[in-house]
Image (cartoon, rainbow, N blue to C red; front, top):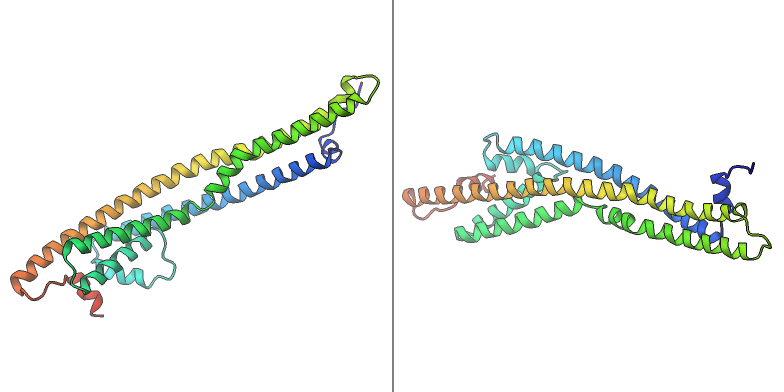
Length: 246
């Protein structure tokens, strides 16, 4: 009975090109797992931070005090950073006594920019996972084709063609395909999972931006109406004044 094939021996005895292909696939697999663990931790942390900030935001605390608390935080991220850039623009435009519509438009632009930048940070690594998931099977297939070609070339030089003579060459070639799938399948699954998860976070943050814009719009309209009745020469809202007066 022929001796069973050993995978390690097949890898070490493979041709140089097939070994290079296997090494690349192994590195791609390790890289994808590093990205998977990092993105899992990053998305989980982002979700928790967003929930904590939303609880704080909807607790009824004055926006000016909330802004001052966020301003003193050195590690702003997620909704906290989005709120900070949006409200900073709100204060800046009120200081210049801009019309209400211009203020709201400026805040919306800043919120969109902040939302986009935070989403880019959140999705860092997704492109690499997509590349590994799409390219790894083809790299493995290339190694397989090359290995099978070498196996049949070697077989053509023997006087008697037997299965035992060609089996090691085909087996070592198929290992490349197996490693390609081993690298690609987790990367594709992780890409789909993280894309859906980051998409849900984006939608939640986009809703927060809409709610914050509406809140600032109502506050601006109400306070400017009150200021016109009490003092026609003063139009700056109290939230802006509280922050700028400090």
